[in-house]
Length: 381
Image (cartoon, rainbow, N blue to C red; front, side, top):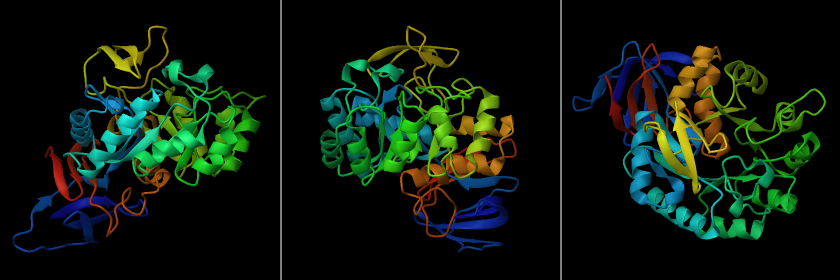
């Protein structure tokens, strides 16, 4: 397959005019004026831009299906839906549910990784609970909130063959230091759903935390006298931070300032979406709790925000509209999240030898084509 006459965002995230050849699942060549064999499928993409496939490392659910359902058919629906929004890889994200339900979810997710359904590929698991603060649980159920427990985490990790890519932790909780030190040798450890102050957060970073989950949300705010987790993240180049860019979780001017503070290598776009993503307003569930969605905003009965209904593609368009530099926007949706799950050698940028995971955008940033592992999954030309 050859994609011709497009602007390609290369491995350094610079735009070049080039053709792109795909052989099997991988990118085979990037050069001007490629000519394939007579049997090679060729697409003329004049006026379009080819960017790497989007990587969503924090997504619970969409189109009525949830990772915690432990339902392979539901996960397959998610994979298909995400592909239509340019997501080529994602981390199925669990909630604070029971020990048994987490084990079931991990088992089913592993099965879908071993035998991938059509659409976006599951890159692994983001374990958002249960090692969080009950005081900053957000839309998580406090019934199953636990102190950090590395032995239990290792059971989860081993049970699924090590597919856990991110685990969340509130570092002020008893047992956190031990778990951070040990878990960080196995996967990315993220500060999340926490009451930590600046000093506590910095201590956690020194122990091995390298990621912050949905910055600003479910953590103390930043002030001029107590910088908190947000200030600690801004102040430490070792940390990448997720940002939900739906315009609801964080006010757009704050998002713009946040991206400027983080710089183009530390910002990560996530959806944190729940069942209502891709569905109409109505009543849904998240982690066993009832969620009411109105005007695409998801809340519990008490008004607590309960995930999002957005997707990475919409967030990319939002950020461009809000004035965040295009280069940073694309890195934040591709290579930065890929680095957080240690898969940057396979996905996240356009380079010969990497998987051919590609999104073709028109001049208005609408999706014209999605290629996943060398196969055209979406064609809107």
